[in-house]
Length: 164
Image (cartoon, rainbow, N blue to C red):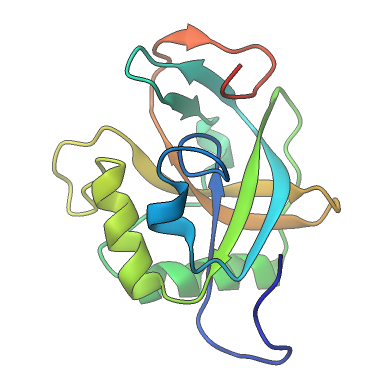
């Protein structure tokens, strides 16, 4: 699915979702309706099924290019800068999900940060929004934002898919 007109230079932000924000899951319709593009993708990490009905992702620290800030335009610009300079694939266990591109980071990122329990100003966090390398189904490598936890928790999903 790709709704963006060719040549549109609007500020965009790309996120990797592996849980309740994916198509067909509980939070998709509320938060993801305005997606410009959705595609299957993977990243390096470990996926855990939490007892609360949603998963958690752990990504290697060395794969994290940046941590989300309270400035969505800065975060979108940082993502674009990294994508322009080149992203490298990381080897290791893969987590499967979907790559979403949106054109309104100022509305989207604060709403998603609240949903995911991420306070970019340094408060207590359930997840952190981090920028990591992601590989699309077409084998394109991009830097995308993802919500991750720091330490393993829950039941490990060795196949890297949720629901398992």
